[in-house]
Length: 424
Ligand code: GDP
Ligand code: IMO
Ligand code: MG
Image (cartoon, rainbow, N blue to C red; front, side):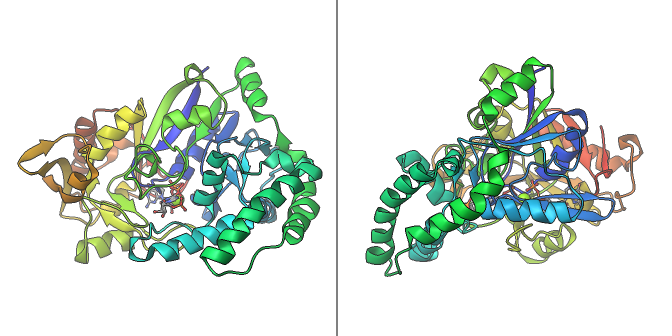
């Protein structure tokens, strides 16, 4: 059976953790294919919350093998801390596999992420300051250290010495910082992290292909989202990897024909953390209301998320960029108190109507959203378990979104809990 991909269709935090956990009931393997601990995937089970950063969201099930794929950037300390805190909550992480080809986030990556952001001043991207961008930059520049280098101290040290020489020049001469010491970094990575990670380091490409050949069901869990994609997002206000479904192949080692179902995920409205264009952004009372009702603060960073009305222009673009077979709409319950709800169905700029995002970003910055207004349902959706039982206005809203996106809606979230969803 071909693999299934879960992909964010907005600017992140759509509920990929919850959906992955839901779909994982019928899977055998869950692979994270890109990103790093910039991700925060929250799952709520029986009132207990788990906020996952690097460990794939299938980990809560004993039948799942969680895999960190080659496309991920791994901060070993964060990964080990996450494993420890999951274990303390009774979650068994012993099946976790980490690709030897995944790149390591090093201390200078995090430092350079912070410094570059400060250097950009008012043009800062608002990154998570986790070292994600600098780690992917080193991967592309072919000076990155990989997880497998932890298994070969001599090679690790050689590579570290070469790259740290350059990083220290940048840190000291450009940013006026103290240079970092190779001995100290090596002591942590080789003497502390390597020993604990070694049993998890694997040839995950062979593992996923063997799993497919044995008829196992594989779920590829995206982090970030389509409009944070390095190629297809609102560049430069993006992350440094490819969250789009195509990235699931590169980031796991499966071939394009090994991927079958692609499940997109979108909130019933939209949010963004960090800087960048946001055509349907809401300020004022309505914005505050959605932030408050949706608890729109970063899962990891605690930053307040920007909020806006559902943007069908972006959703249509996400449908084609990811070849979505279906879409899940989450957080419908957040709109429970609204008298009316707006949906952006197209953009207008310079007398031109856009059904898809304009190719030129300067135009995107200036578009005016064209809204259609639909009635709200003004009742509590959180207890519903069947789509048919939802108030008519809520069902109509979902039907309206389906028509505007052009993709079937398979799941609708009505609360954060594992069981809080209905199927149209
Ligand atoms: P991810 O990064 O895509 O996994 O999403 P996050 O976990 O960062 O953010 C989604 C937030 O919404 C989390 O706090 C979830 O617990 C919560 N959530 C997910 N689905 C629903 C839903 O249908 N309704 C409500 N009210 N909350 C939801
Ligand atoms: P999940 O997987 C929301 C945003 C940052 C910033 C930009 C670049 O939980 O949906 P980075 O640290 O990646 O270089 O920051 O991307 N960003 C996210 N926003 N959800 C995420 O992950 C994000 N990961 C990165 O806020 O604007
Ligand atoms: Mg998140």
